[in-house]
Image 1 (cartoon, rainbow, N blue to C red):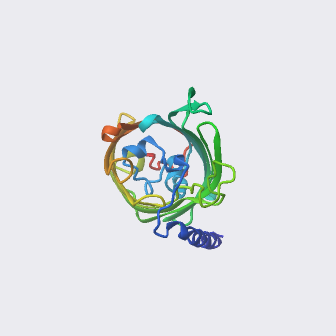
Image 2: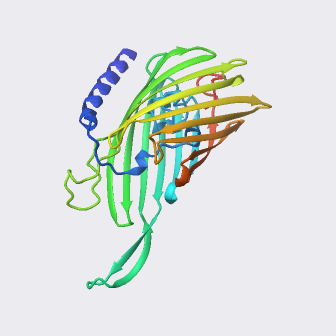
Image 3: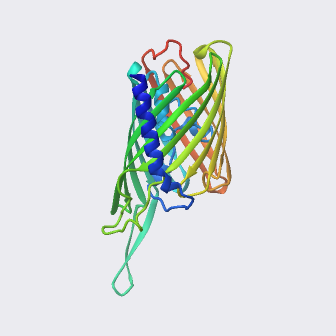
Length: 341
């Protein structure tokens, strides 16, 4: 049975990679659906967006669907983001582990790209009226599945529905899939090295056509990207949930509509009096309006709950701010497994 699953996943990976090749042929394409460019998570922002290999909470749906295999508990997450130029987004995610059958996950995200003032004129060009409308509003629904193919390898697949509206008038929608994998060459009680890779937002529907009759050439492509990352974790003072830990992570992102990006992040966690605290820092390179942007944040977990805060410093452009709340339910697949999540 396991050999059959490995074979199916291998063929699926090869087919999707071949299908994506024309989208990464070295020429930059025009892309829409900005909500698909927004990675989610307050913890993830604090770590500079380096999460492709960390991939250990439901926000992995924005980075690498294979990370769903790491979720051994039912998990619920809610996040709110205040961004640049009055951009805001909300995210709701949930996971459902099924033991040896893998883990299912789903999310619902909304994005508002601020307001725009629209002036209307008479036929002769004279002013008629002015009104304020939402510049762009988008909804992204994701359903994913991840499983352990072997003790050191995980794989995942996700399906996405995107709907976007410009100035409350022009609407477009499409479909996409993500595919990802995780490999753990070192997976010990106190030391872990994980390598992750994913292909995100591979369009399987039509391009984004906001105007009726728009040709494929003039329509907006989805913002596809290839992600690769590595994570090193060192735990101190015991095993898993009883230990302090340090995580160092890095990502490289190759999008189809801009130049290569890099993300670096670190997280230090320690436990005292049944409360776990994490301090985070990171750097985003070519990932936003600044060439180099620093990020930071912290998290506090107690019992089955976790609160996270992240901030990205964008200089004169302002700051990205994210706050999230997470709840876990159930004992998990492994008693005492690392919940620093």
